[in-house]
Length: 238
Image (cartoon, rainbow, N blue to C red; front, side, top):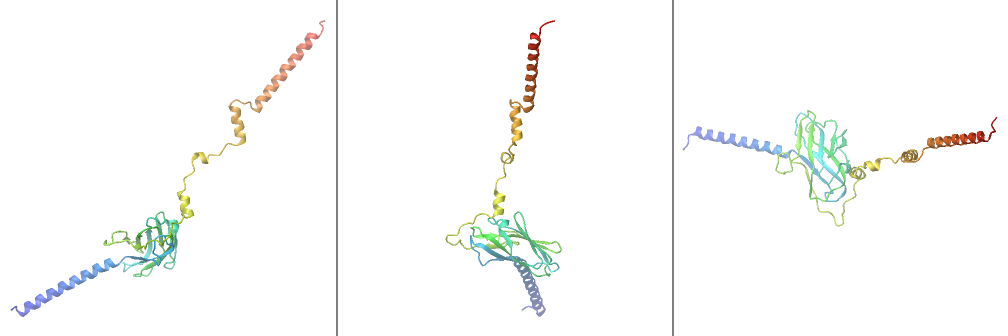
């Protein structure tokens, strides 16, 4: 038999260990739960004009979310994305590899929800949208890991298989323009003007207008000299 005080001490220690373990579990669950949710009613490969909704959960107790920057998955060009809706006062800006939505800070502790519209989803099984979530105090949550078991997983949209007969659309005008080759120097060099062509011909061996004038004057001088000699020869001497 253990003394009464020994039983109480053991019970107290067990209670403290249990409380500490429970606190650790709650803290771990809180970190794992905070992330960016993504969903769509048309989550299907090759679907067109698809609205995708995002819900960025707040992790800060002191600052509101002010900016969300996203790197688009392969198969979606920035030119194919338009803004749907979001927090009041927020604006959409396209980037080289994705886009950003930003504006006045949402209330502290409140999630930032917004949506985009994609011209057409690629033929894929899932789409990962790597996200940087910035707060008014400058801190940033980096939801960029592709491993679903990571501490900072990127939001991933699962897609159903493409509908029968669905085909990829032609590139958007902006995307097609950026993909077109740059004109070569030969194509961009202007052709010489008619005047320049005439001068070039003169330089290659033809006579210019000035040269022809000189030739004419020489002919006149020679002819005049010949007439003078003939007249002098026919004039009787004194």
